[in-house]
Length: 250
Ligand code: BTN
Image (cartoon, rainbow, N blue to C red; front, side, top):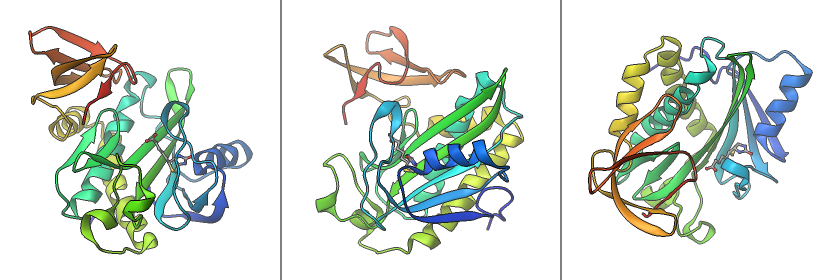
């Protein structure tokens, strides 16, 4: 098993907080923080998702936590590689659950059976052209029952019928995140990207998306350093897109 080097050596466990990402940002403003610190919440009262959305979970049901990283080795223009490394860490953790079809949905959702099981919110603070701090927020549905999930979401319990101990799961997930963060520190950019592409929804296979109200069949060709996705339409025409410029039809 991978020995922890950075992520997960220290965990602050909170009973209730608005958002672990917000808590982490406040902590960074007020004190010196050791890299790899995890802030875990049993209950988030105002969990945040990507682009201003909310992240809801019932108290004690899920993993809701943030990791504080200081990837000063990473230039701002390569910051999407943090999304790649973290997605791969969550992906590898989920592999051990032996669920049905496991995929990464660009940019960084984890899907089981085409339903979302985990979401990732990465908030970077830049200092000139380097990343000074990164707050990696992860929400993963663990023991959530089907009645408490959106139709588009699933949980480890729904997929495996097994109840898990959140604290044990968090340790396992931290190990997987740590492993991929190490690869990032070693600047294994090409390996990380290749691995990420291999697990990406629609990579070299037909996938329907909705763009400006119309449905298209596309294939994912690549992801640029900037994080933009490169898609190829059925007629061979290629296009790049940023987050939220189109929707996946699952
Ligand atoms: C998304 O899929 O939109 C991202 C969801 C991220 C949710 C996690 S839960 C822990 C951390 N704290 C937050 O407020 N959000 C992230």
